[in-house]
Image (cartoon, rainbow, N blue to C red; front, side, top):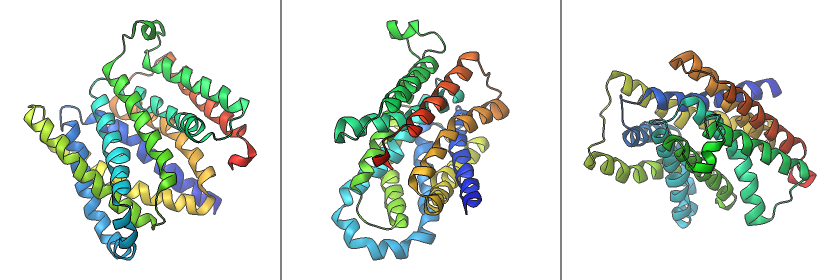
Length: 296
């Protein structure tokens, strides 16, 4: 069971790491907001095949909590991916995936500030290490740029994406007791609806790029794999070994994303990338190892 779960969760994070690389390849082939919207068209179509009976069963709860469920899709799915794809117009895929390593630690910080979740000294140390790693990546190895706020626009957008996804994750504590199929299906539909104004804005501003052949491949990948298949795989992995152990596999996203960036789009791996990646992974590992026992 453990081996099956490990393989499933490794594949899940491989797909998620590939999402950033796909977003970088998409530059010039399909515009960010159009990519964000069209991926949810595909995902919603696929989800209809497996989730409609469950959505009908959960409909009374869905109707009662529709605003919260809509916000999950609008924030966790649309806002995060729109920010990610926009960021990749200006920064590298390697930067984007390493900066995503901050998500678990921002979640930890938000839980502490908002809900006074118990925090150990090891967790604070891990948080500082991860924060330093992200600062190193964001500044492209030159921390002095942080003092002058001379930051790449893409890296700033990635920091916003990190905050958005962390906030979405923390808010999941309030989700109603509906089946995972219903949760994903309703959130995906909300993501599709909330992406429409972004696509209209992109079109009226003259920035929309309709997909060419490469663009259509990226749209298909984003719709089938990160938006649909990985969600199912992650749920299965959680069922097999539990959420705490499964959550640790998220730390593989920067590794897979970095390797894919080098292999598929020939991005250069700089020394500061290696140092930042190691610092982020060590920071997260220290925080997990030293978390209060009551945190699970």
